[in-house]
Length: 383
Ligand code: PMP
Ligand code: GLN
Image 1 (cartoon, helix red, strand yellow):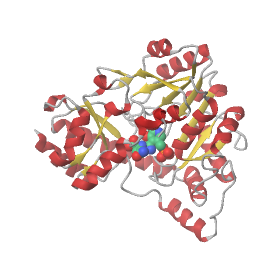
Image 2 (cartoon, rainbow, N blue to C red):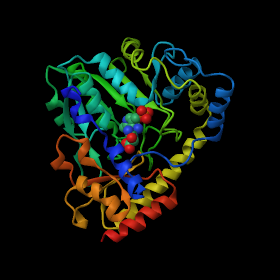
Image 3 (tube, helix red, strand yellow):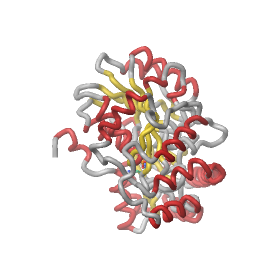
């Protein structure tokens, strides 16, 4: 393995899921739902297979899907030409990797907010670039805010891009208008590309609004907006994602993408196009249900003795393990399946400053109520 990829041999999700399977633990580690997406969407995919939609789809993605993606972005205040400014990818993961591989040179710096989704670090490394992290600030309210001054201070003449993820995994923070305006100002001042991962855009609670950075003044020409169907329609295994942006940037991403996977997911593309155009009520019900599950898990974790942080979006809750007498989230997560029969994910592995994040463990609540309740009953015995 080449040196720059040596830190990335196994993901924490694979490790914790394997541990959960081996010990029979309730898996609140890896974030994937345990129920299916909308019935009509599933039928569309089955029908597509039956109708022979089984060969390579068009390189940029099926036209009906690209049109549905552009229409969806319009609702967030972004305008894209489906023919030149929308590219279907194999999940958001490929969109992120292809964006970096096509726009960042070896030696360039890419700023990521930490904690960061694990694929960002690996993709920056694959591009031969250097990761520069800016910590989110743990606020008294229990949310994790953007320190715009710290972002500005992290920019150097080598900085090429900033990776922005809101709603944010793992903290559950939804970036505010002011925070995003601050990021936009830094991007404009230093002529940076913004690569925005918005896969949790539909999963925001309590009246928080998802605001795409690309819709801020001056940002459209320098922003790639990435999302996928997995979280909005409970189909994380289909891996239908997309990237939208100005034609020159999307054209660059397409150049890389065509030699990574070329195309993907033919029979799922019409199904996701259907979902994007017809399943708003289903998504609204999912959001309601996830908001209840968030309350259920957060209250239960507090009851079990954790100090629970506030989740505004996504399907994750971060819990401080110190009140229970633990000091190291990674060590706790390695023991927890055996000790308590529950799996979580340590936040510190998504950072370059583990000491600052050691006290936090992430739990996923995209699970049936009885699964959450069983996990909580087990965790209550930790005290
Ligand atoms: N970004 C974030 C923040 C995620 O949590 C995930 C989770 N899977 C992804 C990207 C990857 O999305 P996809 O499965 O569509 O590749
Ligand atoms: N996105 C999911 C999470 O954060 C899982 C992704 C994965 O397993 N690679 O838990």
